[in-house]
Length: 350
Image (cartoon, rainbow, N blue to C red; front, side):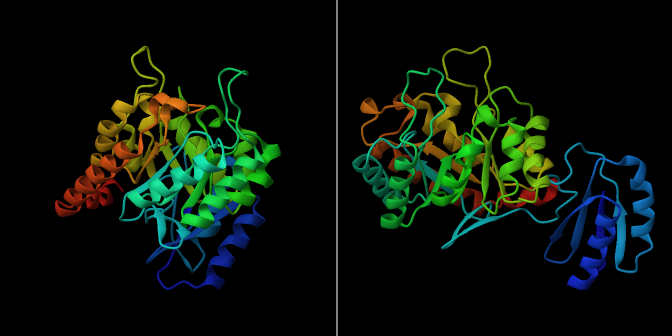
């Protein structure tokens, strides 16, 4: 449930409400919006919730108490009235008014490759550099990444270009080293339901991008985000990267309908990854266009200077010229969306 504080309530009032909630054995999740402060209540003691609700309702600073029946509490619009915007600093935001582009190679291979790619995507307008240092591969014999050396190269590319860095975290044992270099921690599809890992990253003060599992429902995806938020980290980005179906012509089946659907259910930003969603470079641009058109908050694509020589995911990586073409087309689409005020319709989803 949530306790909605009265207009004009102070931080001291908020602390009183939180103190009561915690005294009753529940966890409080405060959120201050533009006009209203809401304190979410989470806990596994339903027999005590009725008593807590009654105590909250008689507090002079509480406007109302609302019981949330949805299985996901913190990710829903019931918990937060304003859309979540992840501010990475230096004017880079995910979930704001601008379409955020994340681009780079699947794997960091060497210094020359990552620096060249960073310069290319920066010049074309990307704000965030993607690149894997620890790579989850289907075959144990495939390239597994450079580890910390790869992270150091990503940091070097950031220092030169100013791009923010997103990279994948695969194991609890790697948390400290990944946090040392990354601006956003990526949790891949294989780890979407690794609840021990989700709980640990929920304790961090670091934005997290949670990719949809390859066979996950929308409900399971949002509940995975709930695991992170329930530990205190509310800076979560959702990423649609396609689901596995019976089709063999593409790597996955890109579920574009999930983007506006999740935006109806959740205040969290949603981005699309058409590279993993299709597995074919020639499909990346049209699917990215479609994702932008349905209202995605960002696009993540793989870019490599020489895809044929890539150590991983070459067939789905864009060449520099094609990435520049994509950026031009996305700019045209987002300009049209602003003109017709399509993006503002998200407000109605609440």
